[in-house]
Image (cartoon, rainbow, N blue to C red; front, side, top):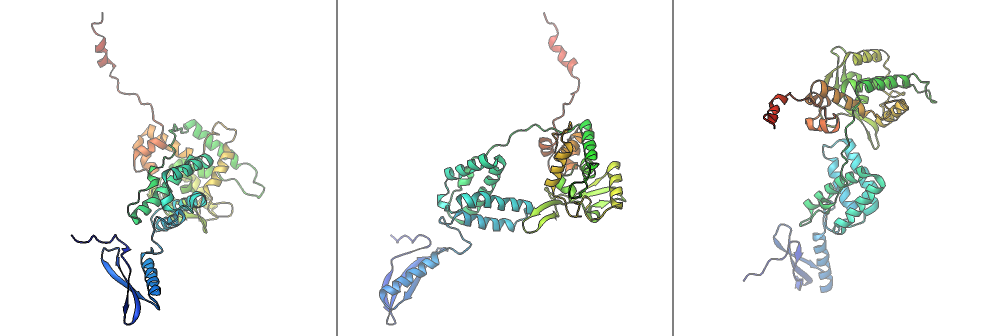
Length: 383
């Protein structure tokens, strides 16, 4: 019966001998390709030769710098995964969120934990703690990162099961979609105009909320997409259209920049209603920047700052509950009621009308065809 082969990446008995008058140690090593090869080293003494051979065998077994073993730490795994993500086509904002999650929750809490020590209970405790301290949204993002990391580990380490696949993440709440009706849209526009008429801030900055709000209502675009609009690239006053093809993001080391694609990576050329086109013509005459809705210094505006100004503008009004995202919901709901959900889907740039329905357009109560005369037969011959 033939002798069974050595396990992959192991060696057999080390034998001492003499070759060419020098002490020599020899062993057979079964490589990762399945081929068993002899290895030998010479030394000043038989013990020295054997030690040199053991060192060479360990070096051959040791992983390359970009390889993983069960002894690798989660911090090392995370860094390799982020390097893979950096080469992907994911947006800069998504890459930044992943890196921030690794830094804030993985490296600080379990960075020194080895892959073999990353059990489901240990990862579950960390995820639950993040949910308690930072919110369910951060915990769900952590789950996405952990699953991505361990998907990489499973590809690189034989017979490894992903503990992240078994971690329970917080469920999303089913929040009823609330979209402003026409009366509330008019109240929003009134609040923004009133805010713009206020005295400049302490730094002399003028308020500019009414015009970008009108563009949000005219397009159904996201705030970041409207704030990224460029006069030359996106605005066609002659034909009365706007092209939504970019958004505003913040990138570490670069600051606030225009990202040359949207969340869905689609390009939407939208005809503009008259009120938005008139507003753009007026702004073009007085433009001091290539951005359509720049900051006071002519730079890109950050959507979070826009959201803060929005909250100040609607404070104390009947539409105090709204945020800039409410305009997108208002557009979706109005188009849904007047034309149909497919029109809302197309305007907002969604790939599936179910996305539009779930997040932006409240389910409209529809009166069905009158079939009562048919069903009245159930009551005939009643005694």
